[in-house]
Image 1: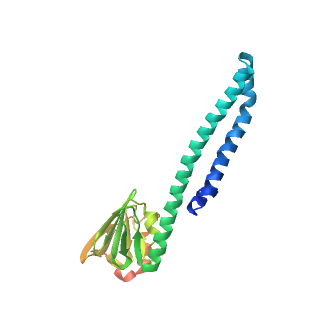
Image 2: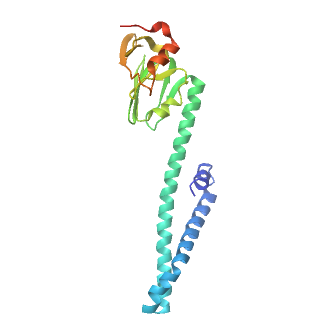
Image 3: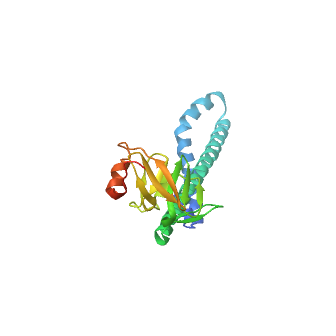
Length: 214
């Protein structure tokens, strides 16, 4: 239900999808009805006729059928949404690797940001702001989505809020890192703890840019 059926819809096999969907609803409702049959008989027959019992069984089956159908329909819609998101993310990664840009696809807003022009990225919960030499781009994304488009050796996360690009670093101290953004110098304070080890990574990358004070 959660894997096969949604994939059939995406593969445009809608007839098979509908048949399997109906079969799953019928089978699940029938099994549930069989499991409850003894309880229904014990509760209805002592107080009513056999005709009333059959009508009660029929009404119960229809109710279970409608409930399971609605549940499976909404579950399938959610699975289809997740599958579409995965397809979009794979497309973004593929295009990014092909063009050397960060590609963010959206319903009303799509951007292609050259990697060479990105200075740093600001991360705030489900919002990502990309600062480049040409413009600033804001997206409702988590950083892990953007991170898949970045070459691993091109960036460094300096704290929970900022991710810097090595290509724009001009110098750094034991507390701050200095970058260029559209010709201007930007100072960002970093966390030099065990979680990020920023100073160690910066010195390993380029020890010549280290300054005692700036």
